[in-house]
Image (cartoon, rainbow, N blue to C red; front, side, top):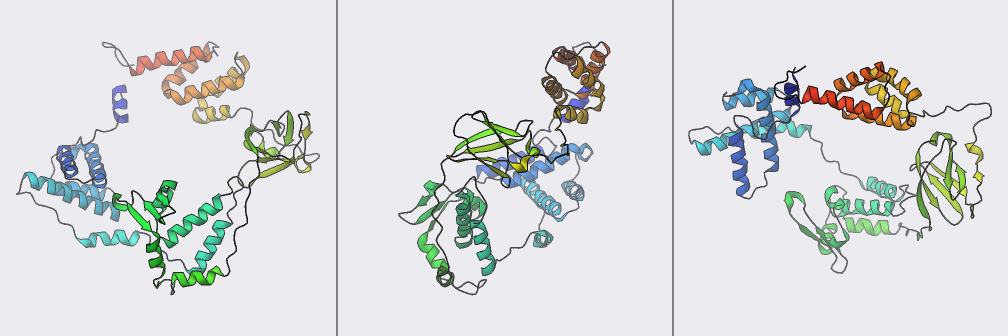
Length: 406
């Protein structure tokens, strides 16, 4: 395969570049001029257009045969419905140009297999909702104390006011009017805005609901007797910092060093410095607490559980993860890496990072050819190696006029 053919395969196909692309593009433009967004239908037409461009032998075939071949390329109910819908759209577009053209019909029975595959809604019982609300309030979040209350509010809005997940996530303080008791819901389904008044919520919650077999307002009156107010939360003042655990298993802060578990070596942690203690957190479940040393005393604070067991040697972390990444991506460079670690003038870590960048950025064939040539002459200057790779890329991928491909 020539370079031009390889690059041609990597280029994306043009929009509506098939022999039916002009008809589909004009149809999309017409529907948008009539006020429709037409994003979903345009996506289906683009998928059909890419299929036609990948199957050049189908050019000039009747539309019904094209739709049949596309439907058979993926034997799923969704593809069948999509193919029939695309056939109807294109046939309507052709009918506008030629009244003799036939419009493909669609029956509602085609959508039944797709609907059977869709997930059916699940109605939560009263006990399940109570457990869900309690779980939201008990959600562990030491870094964000208000997150449990936020989750509780989101569940209440979804359950009591019927808001969708996207509508809840899109809410801002500007959408909530506490004086009027209203919530502005913007860009909802069908791209419309709506206002959710509190009076409407009171009316809905005063109506009998079959799925809970009760009136929500009456249920809340019974549950309210068992509700307990949330405790007043006054977050502790702290200074937040980011640190990297050193190779000895310590975190440095104000010239003092605090121990962490040995498996945290090389990991980035979050350090919260309060008045009396130091909290070092790796993730939501792993937290280490130390007594804070007020002054810079250059001390090491070691907890007993962080000491390695006597007589047990802990495995040392890999000092060069870049070497493993390079060998995984290009095993042929293992010999060159060994020489680079011995004869490079740069720090080994920096040299390996530069070599890893070359492996990720340049094509494999010019890279391996330049590395073989550099290894034959004992050249471990990576800047010169990169220039050698660029010369090979220029010759192989961008030949000048009159030059033949190698």
